[in-house]
Length: 351
Image (cartoon, rainbow, N blue to C red; front, side, top):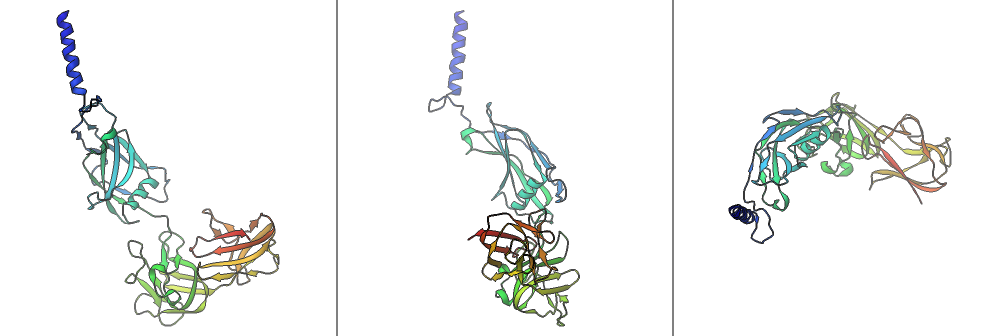
């Protein structure tokens, strides 16, 4: 019995020494560890992300072997991604978990891929690794191996053309924009103040507008025909225009527009427009007007060929229908913002 007690004392002493730290708080001392490999996806696997698929569908599932710190402890895993060739200099954290698996849906994975620097609709390479940490030992991380996957991300932003010209000092980065109707379409349109010469300019692969990119001008006949080589400047007298350009059909057109507000909510009802004034600083149309509850809409050139009276599924103004003012009767500052092509909005602020 005495021998058994002595043996238990020896074991207890060894356990106490093994588990005691230098500061006497009894913490485990972890000086090193090991981390296994990423199990899925396979290195070199390819992903083409589809903007028309259900965006909550799973796009990628990453699994890995557990890290081993030599003692039983809670481990946190941080999954990182970076554009291939950057050596994780500025990694994007795509998830944190305490398990050995992380799944991302299409929208989330696409956002991280674009955030890491991959270009929309262009196949790029993304490096992925997993970092493990424990408690207050987060300054001593372990890393898995890194794998590379091919990813073709997308953007939901409509393709754009810039319209640099005399109206804004021929400066592409600050030029007003036209937008096409959808991905892959070449039917660009928008509202632009023009004054003299102008051209149409495509973005580069990174989406930046600068001279040296493909640009189009008039073929020299001033009949609405675009050319990319040996072009002359398109021209317009000073004014506000609805501008259209089709880089597939190589045509362009401009229609001078003067916008107004009309309807039961306005002082003149449906009989006539109350004209709005273009603000060159904000690129918007404005007016101070007395309004009372009732329907109204915006239209151009005192006619119904160009008008805005309802909202599309994305909440932007579109043709057709009537808008409704249901506020308190009074004087309001009305702003019609057509500066974002195909994403038109308005606001009412009581004076």
